Length: 223
Image (tube, rainbow, N blue to C red; front, side, top):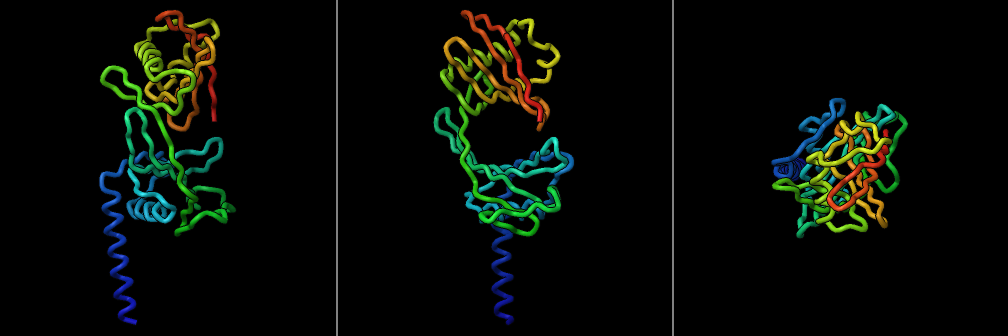
């Protein structure tokens, strides 16, 4: 019995040591109503490993509007090849932040009050404007260089606004958070997240004539 306890204590010490190393330099992005303690961080990192994540570099929490619930997301270390950035993402649930009846699915792993499924790989493309780098989720029908030219004009506010565009809404756009670029024929669509976290995103319909950029329409998605 004493030997069993000694082995268990040793294994626990090794696990805690591993978790401490994993959380070194950990990036955190928590919303006010969903802040994890140091102990909870170690617990979610341990669960992430069980789910198949190779490592954790960032933990963030988010509001699940329009409900009062909150969620957790873990991000793995980035792998960069040229312009392409890829990393693992794992969505995680906390029983105290969801509906009291919420339970883990059959394929999910539970540890304490947390549970999660399998991680997936997310890919983004690096865009460069001056000395700054931006990452966008998808590019369709355009080259990264074309996206950079458009982003440069938008960031420097060198654009015209069509009569259908609400100028006040433009003030809420997170210009440093490009989400996607798409071109079909002469129609160009550029997406940006809202500058406030968990507040939706914007889709801008753009017309380019030479180097002249006009925002003709603007749509907003609100959670």
